[in-house]
Image 1 (spheres, rainbow, N blue to C red):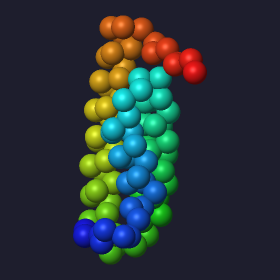
Image 2 (image 1 turned 90 degrees about the horizontal axis):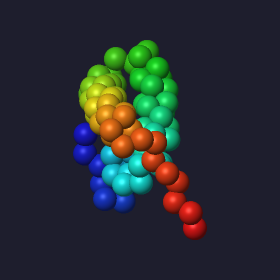
Image 3 (image 1 turned 180 degrees about the horizontal axis):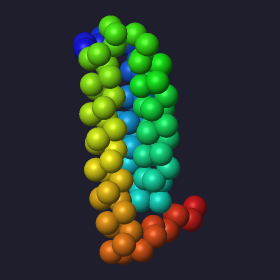
Length: 88
């Protein structure tokens, strides 16, 4: 799927990218959950349209990426404890 430089990415792609690049451990779980919810909603929307096969594959790949990211987050929480929110 190609997009021009000026066309915005779909919401699910933006939220997925935000989760992947999030550096603050205190925000990561929220980013993952937000992206997962929007991706699942989009999968539901595309189920009735066969022409969305390529996008459904992208959505599936993104869900798998979030699953791995979440597993890594959980491993770090077990190892180091819950992340602390930054003050100020």
